[in-house]
Image 1 (cartoon, rainbow, N blue to C red):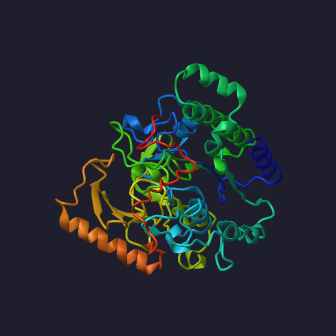
Image 2 (cartoon, rainbow, N blue to C red; image 1 turned 90 degrees about the vertical axis):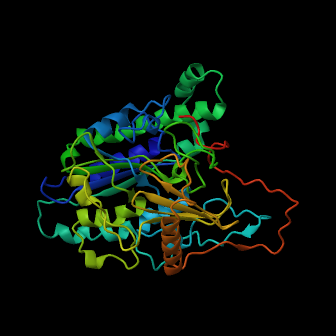
Image 3 (tube, helix red, strand yellow; image 1 turned 45 degrees about the vertical axis):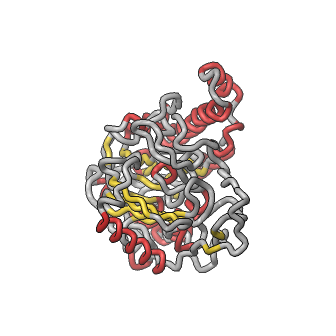
Length: 418
């Protein structure tokens, strides 16, 4: 964390200041394995379970007070590396054929697809797109070069690395709790301290009026179980496409964004690619082909209101792997409706997230027309992007039970207690 902060300060010192009326600087802070309820900041104004009860993140609280929170923000995947490649390219993990981080499971009823796990030379990353800023420098000697910085922490992924003093604090405060819960609470506060240093550095150097700061997580927390959870909490966790695996905290601060505001517009991580390009004044016609996200810039400056225009129908989350309850699965959200398809037995589950964010009431047997429509949309999308699918395992032995590996999350069923 210290090395990341020192590198961040280096970039600030080496980047000339921009005039306030020019293109903004962009700072993206990406946490790891931090669920929707993983902060002491509520992610929904009306849902008490949208913030943690033991986590202490005062710097993220003040960041939220300065900007906008998105209550319906999603990571592109329920695990880390597919989300990160999606952010870099503006495309979904399904299209990129990189849908999992951990090794494939063997011995299951279905065989997981093979992954690329690299950025093809044919892809254009957000870093390459924003280098068009060099051309802008010729327009005015007075104007400096705007910067884009991404700080990717793995703090919660390696919670055992919490600072000793912070760890001692939570060992006393949470005596009797599990070691994982204690270390996660401790390193969450350590991560927040790092966020505070970044905010302070931006303020100290006079960059806050022309710098956009974004904070989000790469996936949800927990062990990925399908348990019903507590009142107000999300179902599932890392490695599953229940809300607990893909809905994440998202805070944005910057010029034109009103303080202490909310947006309930659904957004997804790969929306950031076209958003950053719009802020950098890059002509939309110059964006790479296959981009799936839509710019959230107008929503941010319109009090959180409005929709995001994307080329595809709804938001699709494709996880054809074994890492959570239910096995390989995909989901699609269109409006307030969300359908989850499970590949082992072919069943669909349908939820209305407006009334049932915890995904407790499966409406597939009642709203049959809605379920059929979403199922068809999901199939069309996966076919269009040539998504890789699980296939039948000819060597499967039903008498041998193989436990799914829940790497990087809490090994519990259902959402963990915040």
